[in-house]
Amino acid sequence: MKPIRKRLVPLVLCLPIAAALLSAPPANAAQGAIVRVTLTSVWATPSPDPMGITYDPRTKRLLVSDSEVDEMPGLWKGRNLFVVRRKGNLFSSRTLKRFTVEPEDLALDNRHRSLYVTDDDLDRVFKDKAGKDGLFGTRDDVAVTVLHTRRFGSFDPEGLTWLPQKKMLIVSDSTTRRIYKIRRGRDRKFGTRDDVIGSFGTYRYGFTTAEDVVATRFTHHLLIVSSRQRFILETTMKGALVRKIDLTGLGVKAASGITFAPGTDGSKSRLYLTDSGVDNNINPGENDGRLFELKIVP
Image 1 (cartoon, one colour):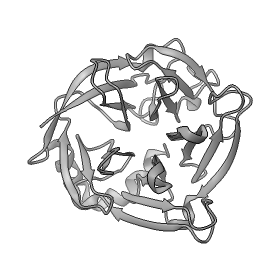
Image 2 (cartoon, helix red, strand yellow):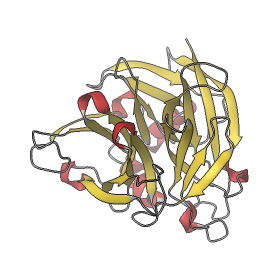
Image 3 (tube, helix red, strand yellow):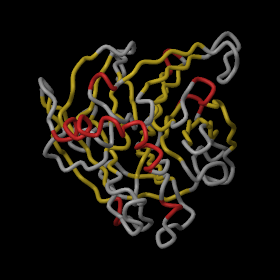
């Protein structure tokens, strides 16, 4: 996450509005309900600021990234990728630091065993290809840059999702509060001139940041989270409002990442949400990260 002073600049003229949006629950919202909460701060290798999250169906485990832990000398052990069981137990800690110490979010292309990773300091999206071991964050990974996000106006890329049916990467930008949709052109490569790029804004729906985005499997709706608002925004691919999922009262401080995975209660699909808590720019000694498993109550 970029320094908080940078991200506050666009909001100086609308602080009263932002404060109201933060405190007021959205109208006509579905309700999120807690299934399980895990303290990522107590893992053997702690994640004080869990940011990105995705699910690996091959291993049946969650992958969580932390883009702030390298800024905390007392906690930094060279690990910024965490492999986590769905019940919240840490399975292993690994590293993406060979190409980024700022892994804001993760998106998995399971078919090709590739992990897309955003970096909002370098303003890039990387593709990390697993080696012979089939694992991410190990020595035989091969990483390349696939997108320079400044090319399409994103200077703070944070959230990321991969839509295999459309061969599309979707990036959320926290500062512009926009969702960018990047589809490969005829050359079947990202980052070239024939990419098809579209976007829409989320501010009109009450978002003052857009931290992460994930796509639903069948409807291809987008679920978007904000570190400052207490609801999940659900839109169509074109940006039309579907609904808001209220998180008020669940204790989420700063929603940072979102993904779908099978539930620990036997359900086929639940929402998993990372909460980065207090920013280390405000409290350099903080270690309050959490992982929520949620269900949606209509």
